Length: 263
Ligand SMILES: Nc1ncnc2c1ncn2[C@@H]1O[C@H](COP(=O)(O)OP(=O)(O)OP(=O)(O)O)[C@@H](O)[C@H]1O
Ligand SMILES: [Mg+2]
Image (cartoon, rainbow, N blue to C red; front, side, top):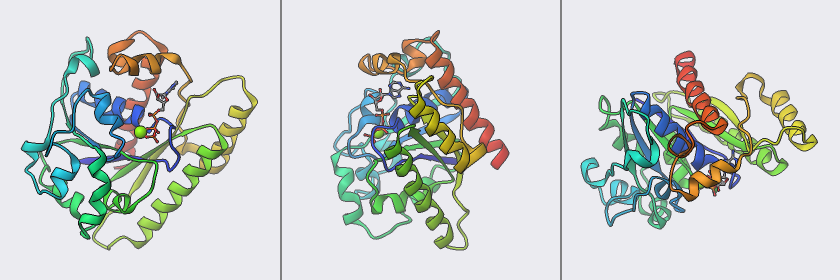
């Protein structure tokens, strides 16, 4: 089981959008996928048109100790797969404002990891969307994470959020318990790229200088992403013939290839 967590301590850089599309794309391609919304904003939950029920949420799993079968929701494939044939399957663990209470309700920083171990053999990929605000919850999430991916806009503040995020992962890796594997950084995904602008060219150059091959080809700023979001759909469902959809598949392919190369 691979656990991919999307992180950037800057808001609005495309974490949720990409997490939702990676989860949907992997499920269409045949994987058994679990999407976990760890952001109290619950944007990922909304994107899949599901509601966080009284116990059907991350707090229910971690603090109320609910069973997995009682907390998972199956979102309607119409909204995330459209006309694609779904070869795998997708479940959602919703998030809501109660997620904020989790760090104050337990001091077991291995809780997420322990609960995910129950799904070994049943799930191929866990995709975790995160809040831009670092908290103790992130420590718990990193303890459960095998791989990370880092969306970033090509703006100065997003790049500094990215830098802080990667420093935290490095610190996590160097202080982790001996029996725990290192978190592998799969890649950095520049988002909302505007070709032909000096600022974004500068951003790409800075990323290339600092992180080289870890940087994925950018996804462009396109209004179709917002339109799909208004329609409550992924771009796979909303605009399957669009360049945005091609870019989303490109990203899914990078993730699949990346784990094959990194192990
Ligand atoms: N390539 C793109 N082109 C245009 N708009 C985009 C693109 N990617 C995402 N968006 C839009 O940008 C907004 C912010 O994206 P998103 O919510 O995924 O960011 P986030 O990092 O999850 O934010 P937060 O930190 O608040 O959770 C959304 O309205 C989304 O539809
Ligand atoms: Mg988000």
